[in-house]
Length: 392
View 1: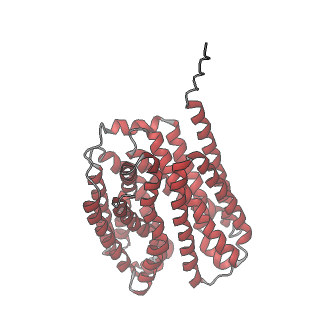
View 2 (view 1 turned 120 degrees about the vertical axis):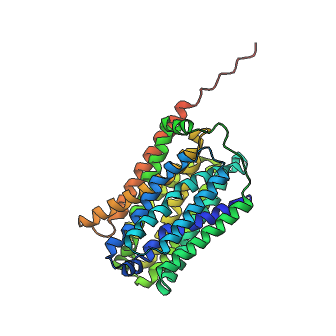
């Protein structure tokens, strides 16, 4: 794999850390700003909203920029947004700066996926994309636990100051390691938007939204599952979340390699495995060892899907992949919102703390159904083989 992927992975590591570490330092930020924890939760929502808005908007605005320039600009905006958030004087400014930090998230991954795939042979494209996304999954293993610990010991502002430094390192790495590729040939906003006229593109985005929504239905409420159902001490939960992060890293690694070998069959297996594991988690959540093993398996099965869908949507976008590639990140964050909302709905309805796992399993089955429809369309779109003429 080209060394340039390391620079992209560092950027992904910083983005993954800032997205998820806010959950770990939320009590400290709430106390500092003098607001309740539910009110401080708007800092999480503001970032997610920034991702959903920024992914298509910034990609569309910069569609004619060389992709290396695009990567540097997005990582610069990310660094500034996190630095300003670390210096926020009050909660209102904090929300604004979290939104600003979220804007370049999807555009960076969209451009980064296109660059990563362009650096290798076609047979290795999904693997290359998964190497970039390895930074995102490693953030859950290393960045989030260490960032949470730093925020608890020194203060939440120090955590986001360090994230800004990571962003600066990524800028230097991209400038040094990523080759200049010139402006995208025949790139235009009309051409990028034209990709959205293809039903397969919308199907791919729907698979991301509902398939990965199943992961977030579970993970959004995994802490009370582990403490109130499995019986773990709160201090142990951080280690278990790191275990889930290890599962995500392995799943991302496997997903890229399986996608290069047999994309759609691998996707069917991953979604089926995710549905099965989430269903099993409703039973194993009652036992400490079973809960730990299953949360690891959820990470593996869920994050195998990411590189597969990134490769799938770039394939279906044809020669205009930047905007739809960025839209995957919007779909990812919508999946986060849908999963968390539906999981909370069944808990509020009195169905118990493990009920979000059933919701997640059903969402994964819905994603599998959509993937099957997409596969059927593939077969219909393929030209029929021409029969060979018999020898006379």
